[in-house]
Length: 212
Image (tube, rainbow, N blue to C red; front, side):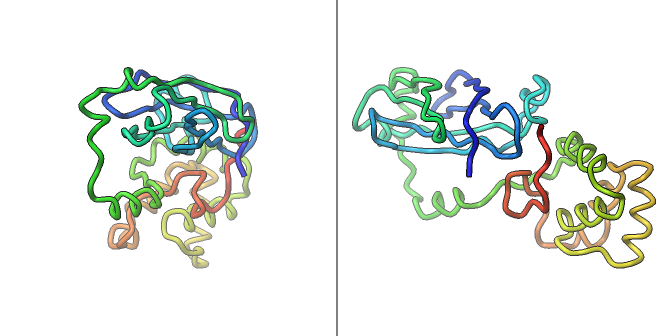
């Protein structure tokens, strides 16, 4: 499920990278953008990554960024493509082939299998500070014990043990950010094979933030 796009901003295209941010007015769903040649869908992307610019602008705690790589195959049917919200179908932007660097747009990637695998992997974030608005939002919404369980599942991918729940719940009541910083500096996290935190729209995120 995706929400209708109400907030949209595209950055100037750099090389073949089309970036920006998009979001609904309220609610905990992200938006999905489609790239169309007339009525044919040629590419799609979710606006579910972090952007410091969006955070500074006060949009969705910063979690509304998108990025789309443009290739020559996207312009086979038309020299001009339409960027549309895939829920509301309203047009948000247009991209002409002349706005993409001619040398870059012809350079198709050859490692297609690796590209497909990479596209399926959700980004992981190691900078806990970009989660601060969400962490404080969750701390205000959940009880101290629920918040600690949320933090354990996001960082260590397990439920807290009894001692950890007790000690970290006391810390959560004083400073929620310290719960995250201490868990991410713990031996268990440092020695784990999976580093980084899933974004709030990932299936691995324990509970969606309340963006209203």
